[in-house]
Each structure stands twice: as structure tokens, then as C-alpha cells.
Image (cartoon, rainbow, N blue to C red; front, side):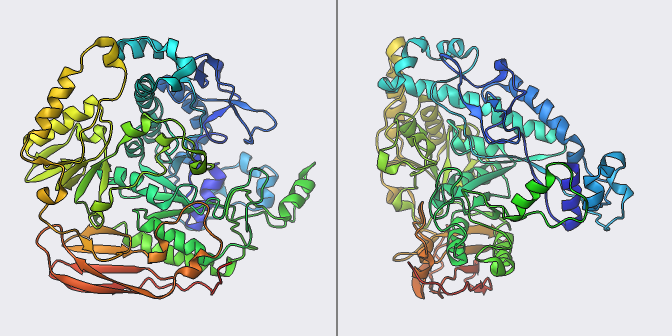
Length: 603
């Protein structure tokens, strides 16, 4: 691990580490007491295809803070040397020296220095939440549940899906356990070992906004998750003041085939399709791309192979291909385009890290609606989507188009306040709180009412219902109804957006393209994705970028305040997106981000 880190430093590369042998976290050293549980006993899930093959380890419970720390101490010890800041001198021993074991006898700095003087911190990385969630459980959960909700959940667990209200209470408490028992201590531990966290929270049965905000770098994924999903981690980053929103990009681009694959068109990918997907991610708040693939393979060596090594090397030389990914490497179909394409993404990402995200409307994330539902219809399920609560298909309301709405949840409303005519929520400010859900938790209603009483304009599109079964056992519900009536009776609460907001949207126009905007000093920086990048979904059609021809869109700018009256025609060249700098005085400058992929034809 230390060798890999020092090599990366010498090459000017960052080097992050998975925090375990695979994901979800686990291993052969995880005890039964610290392993994932179901209400009826130990989870049968095992960690397959890990570095420990042929052994399969237990899955770490993701609901127990103490179990996580026991796991972290074991795994962290293996990474300790690699995570420590180097002396500023990075060296790479030759392959022959390393393979003969010299590196274990002498420190790396005993070899010739390459003169690197700026070591980089490494992130501890966690991929998507891939713990089996049916009946998820941990010690003491039943007692904590009864104390919180006033009834025993165990009798309902064998047929929980037949009791949606009980299932809601169960999911609400599980969500808190996942956040407190895994995501928060993960980042806490990383800071103790001179690191930080880069985390994909999707797939976790919790408030995804709170989970993403617990990470130092919230990470999305596409196209197993549609680009619009990235607005959730982007919102979490804005609310928690995190400057970087990364994405594991180009996953299963044209479809997924189980191990060993290969996936459709693997090795024949069009870089133009990749660019189209990257642009869709940029237009939904992503500003850092991680390739999903296997870009390197061993080179021929001059040293004498050890026992068994010759066969392994011959297999590696045949070509490394990750079965679920775009093929990235010297023999990829777009290898010649990598410098230019990576340069394009680097330029856009660099610009979209400047300043802070623009915000106008805070939209309540309707997790209650999703927690009250079960599985998605079969036609909507895909390798990464089985349940409504995974939020694959959640989109901001159409009437908020052009306002760059950001999601908020109860976790952020608790500390919010109305100040200077703005809703101050986390590190962000908004002009309006928008609530449109069938179900609204009592805790959330209390916070919305509190903020409305302070003066926050609230667009309450419909009268919500209280989810959960606890009142059925405790009796009542009168206070919820009183709070709802009090909220609806306030003068700054309405079901009409137009009656609450006088300012025009930031961007409006017929069929206006998707965009992301950041405030940089007294200017606005816009990324407008080519209109063909809108609505991309899994699986991407092979050659989809051929549809990204020349087109134009006429738009009108607002500023979130008095309208400038500035109209502009956006000219999109084939497969090109736009980066504009707009001053509040109306000056518009188009920045050069041109990159023209090779021609392709849709098939």
C-alpha cells in the first residue's frame, strides 16, 4: 500500500484506498458479533470475489459504531504507513528490486528520488451500499424501537411489507442507525488517521442527503444511476459546504451482464457517448470525474519469475478487462482520445469548483413517500434499483425549472433559520421552501412550521398525511392536525408558487437546456449541457451522441432578484456544451471548452 502511494506521489497522482477487501466492508476477520444481522439471525450474505478468495468473509454490520471501530482498527493498521504524510521525497524502486523483497528490507527513500515535494492526502473510499437490507437488524434494536414508537416491532417483522405504517417506523429508525453507526464514524475515523472520505451513499436505507453530507467528498455514479440522481449528492455538498462532488462515471454504459461479462459493446465504446454522459453529470452538479474501469496492466519484466508468477503474468498480459465497465486502457477503442477527453473534463471540473452553487428554492426531499412504498414495478427495476427508497426516479417539480432547486431534508431543516429575508439552511441560502409530498413526518412538520412562523415563504402544494403506526398504538394524532392547520393558516404559506415568488427564474426559455450555475464573486458561471444530454438513462443507447447535432436555444436570464432583461441565443455545435460567465451587469463571455470527438453514426 505504501509503495503504491509513493509511486503515485512521484507521478503526480492522487491515491485513494478502498477501506477493506471489497464492498460492502467485511472480511474473514469480522467476528459473528460484528457481522451483519437480520431480525431472525445472522445474515447469510458473504463477501465474494474479494482479495481473500477463495475464502469468503462476513459482511460488517453497518448499524453499530463500536463494531465499525473494531473493523477500522484492523484495516487502518494495514494502511497506516500509506496514510501518513511522506517526507516530501517520493521514490520508486525498480520492479526487480520490489519483487525480490528489497523494499521490505529498506525504506523507499533509500532509492533515487524523483524530486516530488508535495505529497497528497489519500481518501478512504466506500463504494455504494451493497449490504442486503431485508430485515436488517442489530443488537438492542427492538428495545430502541419500542422506546421510540411505543410498540413492539418483532411480531410484524416476518410480514413487514403487509404493514406499510409499521414498515415506515422501522425504516425511519434503521436510517438513523446507518447514519450514526456507519457513515458518521467512517469520516470521523478518517480524520484521525490523516485522511478523508470519498463515499457513495446510494443504495443505503437512510436519508441520503444526511449520509452524503457526512462524507468529505460525496460521490455519485452514472449511468447505473441516471445523471439527474447526482442532484442529491450535489445538494448535500452545497448544504454542508463541501466543494467537490465526484462521480464514478461510465458504469455499465450500454448495459450490465453478470460476472464474468462482458457487457454490451465492451471494448467498442464511443468517446462521444462518454462525453455526452459526462456533460449530463456536469449539468447536475458533478465537478470531479473518476473513471470506472481498469486502465493499467503489467508490463514485461526482466527479473526471473517466482513459482506460479509466470502463468499469472501471462494471463495479465492477455489483457485486463473489468466485466462491468467501459474498457479503459492502451487497447481501448478510444485510447488515442484519452488525453484530449481527459483535458476537456479537467477544464470543466476546474471551472465548476469555483465559488459556490447558486440556489433559489429548497425542495423538501420526500423520503417519507418513498419509505411508505415497497419494491419498484418490475419494468423500473435495474441492477442498481429495486426499491422506491433508493430514489432513482425522484426529480424536482417541473414548475421549478430554471431555478436550480436543491434538495433539503429534516436533518438540515432542524438547524435552519430565517435571517435577512433568506432561509439559511446549512451553508446555503434560499428564497423559498417548497414542500410537495403525500406523507410528511411529524418531525419534519414541526420544523417547517417553525420556519414558516419565522417568515420563510413555504409553498405547500398539498395537505400531507402523517406516516407511521406509532399513533395507532399511542392513540391520537391531534397535535399533528393542529400543526398542519397552523401551517396552512399562515399568510406566507400557499399552494401557489406564483403567489410567493416574484423574482423570475434564473434561466427560462422554451425547452431550455439543463444547466448548473455557480456564484463566483459578483458573476455567475453557467455550464449548459448540450440538449441531447438531457434525459439520459440506463442503459445508454449505443451511438446516442450522434443525435447531438447543431441546435440552438433562446433563453432569458434572471438573477434571483430583479430581472436583467438579458436574452441570449445559445448556439450548440455538434456534441458541444457551453460554459458561460455572466456578470450582473449583463456582460456574457463564452469560455472555450471545445473538444470534438471523432465522428460516429447511431446504430
